[in-house]
Each structure stands twice: as C-alpha cells, then as structure tokens.
Image 1 (cartoon, rainbow, N blue to C red):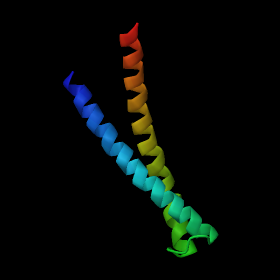
Image 2 (cartoon, helix red, strand yellow):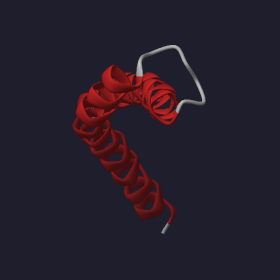
Image 3 (cartoon, rainbow, N blue to C red):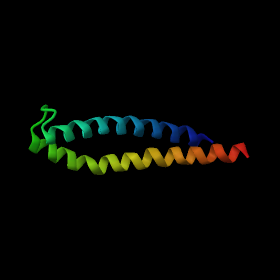
Image 4 (cartoon, one colour):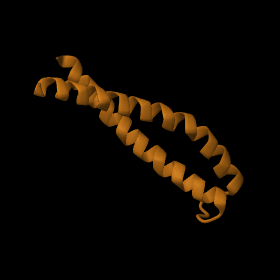
Length: 78
C-alpha cells in the first residue's frame, strides 16, 4: 500500500503543473487573439502550440490516477 502514497504525490504534482500550464495556455491563447497583450502574438502562438503536448500529458497523468482511485473507492464500497 506504500505505492498509494507515491501515486497521491505524483497526482498532486501533476495537478499543480497542469494548473499552471492551463493558465499559461489561456494567457497565450488570449495573446494570440489580441485580447491580452502580455506576449507578442507570434511568440504566443509558438508557446501555445508547444504547450498542447504538455497539457495533454499532464492531463492524462492526473485523470488516470484519479480514475484509478475512483475505481478503488467503488470496489471498497461493495
């Protein structure tokens, strides 16, 4: 059962990284459209397109671990 402790830590790190990646993803998306001028539109587009893969990877890690924990909870209730 020690692996559950490590899965929880991995999930929390993945969730925080995903949170900040999504913030950056929204900021670069708005910068591309011209609504939020922190980053130049060209640079924002480059960052935005490269973030897609990272967001997808961390989303899969986070959601996969949470689905695993949900199945373990459902199994325990029966």
